[in-house]
Image (cartoon, rainbow, N blue to C red):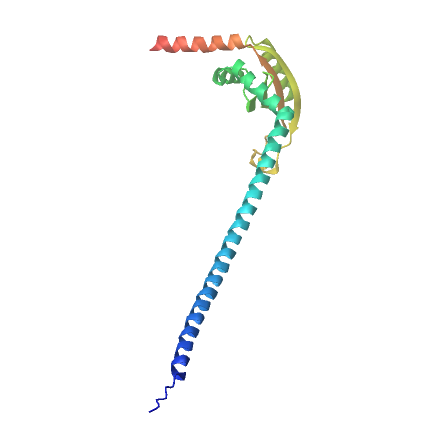
Length: 206
C-alpha cells in the first residue's frame, strides 16, 4: 500500500518564519541606523557650537592681549605709575587745605572746583564778582605760608541768564561774574603742621 506525503505546506510555513526573522532584523537595523544618524547629527551640532564658542573665546583673548600690549606700550602705563607714585609721596589731608583756601576768599567769592594734579599741583576754580577780586585773591595766595607758588591760569567772564536778571530787584544792577582758574604748589610740611596743630588741639580739648 502506497502512502503519499505532502510536504509543501510545511516548507511554506518555514519560509515565512525566516522571512519574518529577516524583516525583523532589517527593521531593527534600519531603526538603529536612523537613531545613530540622529545622534550623530546632534553631536555634530554640539561640536559645531563648541567650535564656534572656542573661536570666539580665542578672538576675545587675542583682543584682550592686544589691548594689554597696547596699554603697556603706551604712555598710559607710565602715567598710571606716576600717579600712584605721586599719591604715595603726597599724602596731604584735603580738609585743612580747603579751609585755608576758603579763609582767603573775599566775601562774595565761591569755590567751584578743587583738583589734585599729577605733578603735585592743586587746581582751584573760584567765582568772583569782579576781576579785581581775582587779582587780590592771587596776591593772598602768594603771601600764604602754606603755598609755595600760585599762578592765575585763566580768567573768564560768565554772562548772566535772563532768569537771573528777572530775580533781581528793580533798582539792582547785576554785573557779570568771573571764574578764575589757579594752579597752586603747596608747602607739604606747612600743611602737615596744620594737621598736627589740629590734632594737638583736639587732644587738649578731650
